[in-house]
Image (cartoon, rainbow, N blue to C red):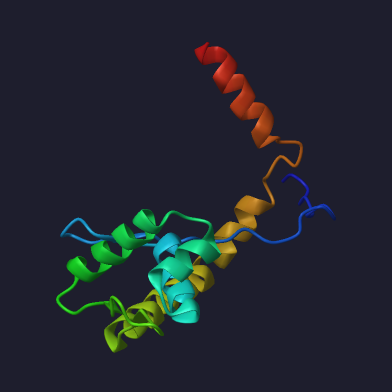
Length: 140
């Protein structure tokens, strides 16, 4: 049996699981949508969220629109023209976020042992930038 490799000091965090849900109706919900919802909650507007995230207003609005059309109940309520609080997260939106985070916690807990095993097998000399450069060179 091979000796167990330990994480080098440069490894700042353990492996993690990222969840992206693909609904049967074609909608999606993942980290990008979660960050947008959290930022809209903080900024109280879609344009404020777009500025805070450094994304175009159009992209933020399209994500918000997709979320509202994806479910029977809206996720984000908008109030065009209102001087304060142009958007807010609906109670259904808050429940969606809570359930998504719960799924993430369950996935992380149930996959910890497998992730630890795979992490112990990592090649710490791997350089993703070198890999991308080699792939680009091969395509040229």
